[in-house]
Each structure stands twice: as structure tokens, then as C-alpha cells.
Length: 441
Image (cartoon, rainbow, N blue to C red):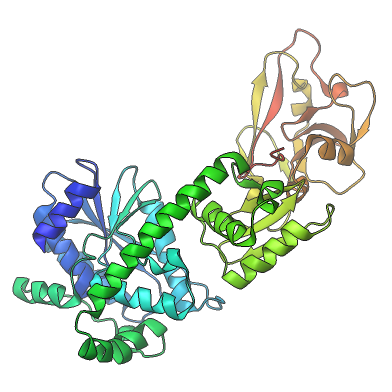
């Protein structure tokens, strides 16, 4: 097993790439940590333990990990996460999402996260996805290597069986945690592991290897489909948006393939097949002024001006107005991001407006402004439509006021009657939203 791990590190990762072990404290991940410590060589090695807050024994597990890490001379990072109690996908799926979100946040640039998934995990995954009606991409099972966070996600033990890891643990005299939830037959994976797969193995002893081989064939087919989809996306996608006209020109199976690839390429898990089909009918077939929305656990899709836009987080509530002295960046919250002031050597706002303090407000309707260089006042609503501000961002554009004087609209317009005198330095807002706020057309 050490040779297999060493080969995976040398074959799949850049030389010297730091290693981070996703360590639950259980047997499999403890084997991976112990083996990695033996073969890492000059590569930096550390471990990351995530506490989901779901087990009463969690504090004891963290202490166990600290003790074992100290024995191995490996740096350990403990991280706690919160798991949504009423997640529609179930507690197990919610815990997994929270765990991998924490992994991605913790991973350093160029660092590789190693998990202890093995051959029997691959067998379970392929069977589960088959029973759920997955296509070639799902039946490709667990990938050995993928981009993740700011680095990589590597599963170097996919060729090793659970028995192989158990033998290693026994021979090395390792100590590990037994998670009682693994014996619960309620979760589908546990039911397969304890009730179904032993019967399959009794009849077909090489079932796990055969499933892994089938997963490899599906991975090859998926790579070919992805190559076609990437060629389409090169012309139809711009950032986090996708051309509806180009999508509508394709056959329905191609539309679904392209939309799934568009989402996965941006690190977003696609919605289920039924919701994906329904969304495509709405986005492609709805009247031009309609604004359909597809909302699922991992994101949102919205339509505007002939394009579909991906939002990785929901717009949420509109920020509340706030007084501001402009000295430090102001956190607006949610998609609205942050607002700061920058110096404007010429053409900026008169610095005297700062004397009485500023206020940041958001649209309520009826606002008017005469932009610098314009001859007359304009309705803000009309200006936003003309420049293509995305509808879900219009209520989140910060409006800078001094008393009742509207000074500026985000980083788009300065009020002509609030400018500094010619030749005087002034200031201007510097808005940094969390997402694009202008249409991609």
C-alpha cells in the first residue's frame, strides 16, 4: 500500500506539493495519515479534523486526534462546522457539504487534500448512483484527482480494498475512532455496505473490482462528452452566464449535458434531473419578459436578456441603510459586498460633503440623479435598465447620500451638482460587490 500511495503522489501531484489529510480519526483516514507520514519525504504534511457537532463524543474524538497527531509529529488543525438541522437532502448530505466547504476554505494554494476513499467506497458509490438513475458522469464514481479550493483533491487509495487497509492498521498497531453512526442501517450507503454488498461479494467475489472497471469506462465516456461541451461553452458562456439562444439551438439531451457541464466547471453541483428538465423548459420556452428562477441547495439560476445567470449564493435580504464616515470600508452584507472611498484627483465629489457625514441607502423607488456630464435629471430606474444592471442586483446598489442629496450611485454615476470645483481633488465611491452586477451582453 505504501508503494501505491507513493506512486499516486508522484504521478498525480506537482513535485513538492504540500499534503493535507482529511482526518476523521476513523480507521481508514488514520491509515492514510500514518502511511502519508511514512512516504511524504520533503513534502509538507498536516492533518485537518472537522467536528460536525452531531455526536456527543465529538470532543473526545478531537482529543484523540491531537494525541495521535503528536505521536506522529504531524501538525493538526481542528475545525468546527454547523450542519443545517432541516436540510432537504438529509443530515448526512448536509454534513458532507459543510465538511467539504471547510476543507476548501482551509486548503492552501497548491496544497493537496488527501481523503481515504478506497475500492469498496467506490463500489458503494457506483451502486448508489446506479440505483438513483445516474448517467455516465455519476457512474464514473469517485475521481482519483480533481481541482479543489485553491489546490487539489486526491484519493490515492482507490485501488486498495477495505481489507487491505484493515490489515495495514493491524500490522502498524494503529488506534482509531469507531463512529457508531456507521452501524446505522438507515442511511442508504450503510444499508448497502452491511446488507447488500456482502451478498454480492459471496456470489461475485470480484464485484468491487468489476464496478471500478465499469466506472473507469464511464469516466472515459464522460471525458469525451465534456470535451464537446467545453467546445460549446467556449462560445456560449461568459463568466457565470450562458447564452439562451445558443442553448435553444441544441437538442434537449445536449442542453442538459451543457448546463450540467457549465455548473460543474464552476464548482457547483447540478440539481436533480427532473428539476433540470423543468428549468430548461422554463428558461428556453418562457416569454421574453419572464424571469424564471431555479433554486436548489447549491445555487440559483436566473434569466435576463437572453442569458442564464448562475448565483452561487442567494441574493438574501436588502441591506439596511447605515451612517458612514467613509474612513474605512463598509461591509454591506450578502451580494452587495463592500463600499469604500477612493481619492479622485479630478472629476470627483466635493470633499466638503464629508464634513457632515455620509449615509449609504438602497433603492426605494422614485430616485433621480443628474449624472456628471448630463444636462438633465434622469430616473434611476431608467438608467439602471439602460446600462443593464441585473434585476436582482438593483436593490443592492449602494446609494451615497449627504443629507437628502444623492451624491453617487455605486461606482456608476456621480451627481453633477455634487462635484468638486474644477482643479480640486475630490473623492469617489469604490464598490466591490460579491458577484457581477452588469448583464453580460
